[in-house]
Length: 520
Image (cartoon, rainbow, N blue to C red):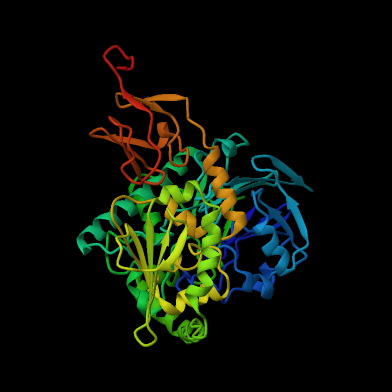
């Protein structure tokens, strides 16, 4: 088995039973904010586009690139389809032109003419755009797990199928926090350092859990070539930057005693059949090293190549003839009318301000308690967002049902909040269609109480995290009576059970008395 890195989460896997192309992404994503790092636009995509199988893990636009699929990927490929609760991924790929689908069953192995595959689908409303997934495959000679940026609670389902030779997984940030928040710079740096440390630690936990022979850091980081977003690149020796690159992570692993990390740039080929898994790069080793050691210089050259097309794209966003509020009001109020748990979870008005110094601002409130959309009238709002009017006009003009997978991931906005993070706010903006809002409402309604207990640092508590069911025996950490789940960084006060991170579910916990029994 051979693995060719194609940039970001994309990989071309050659097996004894056919080739698999994973998550091909080249086109700038999220309003031209994200670019693959390093540049992968000059690869021989005609060759990789002739793969036998296509796997698109989920609909995030740094994984699903419809423009690139239409141009380069043969529709003769058989699509390995995750088992999601909605048909959005199937519909999107069908619209591109694909007709051959294998509908996998989550967690079950599928036999495909000598190739064994298993896709584990995550289906929480907070997983990707209503879903994320990981691909396990075996050709009888080697086993590979492409976890991409999915965050399963554990990897035991994959480990039970045999020793994994290659583990591909995310290690870098893929979010807007904390950069967009209206916070003092010192606080933003502290939160960034915490976020960076947490995501690196989480990746090591997955690596330790699976114990694969070789680890390939993928699915990040993006790079930011728009001058407005240049500061987001990890080129300023900022320990609070959440976008460390492949070389940073490889060095991080070496510092902690790991020697099995293999770094791929676009076009690098790793041979799993060889004892030391050699990597052959498409350019000389000194040039590979320069990408990372002279990263700012590399990005400036990359920027010069891509900036003209980006500026042309930006000029198309404004829709001056669109009455934004008139279009938004019936649309959002219909979604609000079908929202119960999410609206109650938000619990108040959310302000949205779209600015334009020449044409004027669009300033409105989404009032979740009354299920209304109305112009902002100086009322108090715990949550507020500010962006450019042209961006709001564009997502309204195309009927964008997922503002997380467009506006928010672009980092082209700022946010304010009073109090803790509220996951219901962002879930709502991810579910601006009847199908999505009803699925999310049903998912929240079906969450049951966890009745399995563990003992951790003199506390007895439920085993599964109340947030997204991570195993707290692996991901839990207690300091001064506060539990932190390292999966997503959520915190609970164990004395009261109260969630400290968000308006979220409480945890069931009690102190362990002397003699090993619970104190209650």
